[in-house]
Length: 74
Image 1 (tube, rainbow, N blue to C red):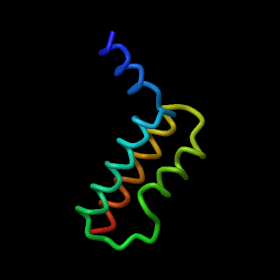
Image 2 (cartoon, rainbow, N blue to C red):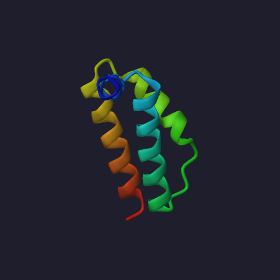
Image 3 (cartoon, rainbow, N blue to C red):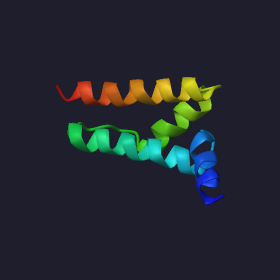
């Protein structure tokens, strides 16, 4: 039952657990790129969350954001 609950939380893209994982990925990209970014990881995630209408759209925005941050350091 616990595993099902955890899986449900991970599948819930609007949930705090899922969103905090995305914030952590953004933070890691910022840290590894050593690029100065004016917005916090939480602010960037909030923007994507408000813009996305589906989990696929949210993940696509997150992936694009992380890729963009990594490319800025090159």
